[in-house]
Image (cartoon, rainbow, N blue to C red; front, side, top):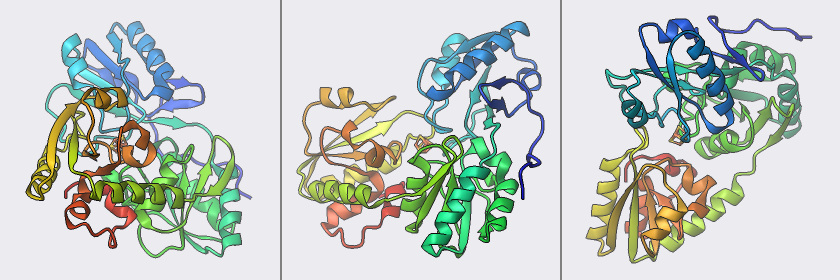
Length: 345
Ligand code: SF4
């Protein structure tokens, strides 16, 4: 029985609460005197620890206090303000949908969890077998990708056929909230190694197939039920079909900015006789949206997961920019959950 494993990947250094930084810190900051350290909310403590280490190395380190939602959300403005020539972005795998500028330098440093997902995977495999799923495709968030080959071995030991494919930036088996392209090939179900329901739900919406969550933190597994999310979104979509006034939401976050899609959606709706305004945000918040007054419906061109996972952010029915064609045609019959991820109308 597999109880130990060889981890994939080398060059690891600073540790914090069971995580290990996926880059060699000295190597990463070589030649930089001022560094901005960025991390998502759950890893802010890791950012503080890294900043402390950098201070000990004679580097001026600043910690970003802002959210860092994904590889789409790199704090270029903050780095410029404090004169940092390097952004050390902890916790994500790489840039999402934006071209890296020449300056400042950005180093993405995954925070790998030092905990085998074997227990959760064994539960997931049992669940898959109970449901009659034999062929599975494996996806993981970046925290767990070092365990990919170990995970495949565990699933095969449990009698499943387990495949994996390159995902964003060619990283084997990787899934992110808005890109599940690694989940392909013929399979009965996807098994997603991640904390919570966010990524497994995304996998179910993207693939239209069953998705089983294997949560290494909880050591347990469950099958995601995407139906309530789909029903709620279809209700929003049908309300938006009848709307007369729209606010199109544009984000300035580097990988979420989709001005081309937003302007195209606005043009389509105006052509259909609707009243449309476009508003620009760094951080989309309910308070900021309410401040802009009432609209019948909202078109979101920022992170596509907002309308699914956080629909209450919007003061009215909200759909994604890639779904605009359903509003102008008035026909939602052909809508599929995958349409949530389309970037253009
Ligand atoms: S799901 Fe949203 S927050 Fe995550 S990388 Fe994609 S756009 Fe960014």
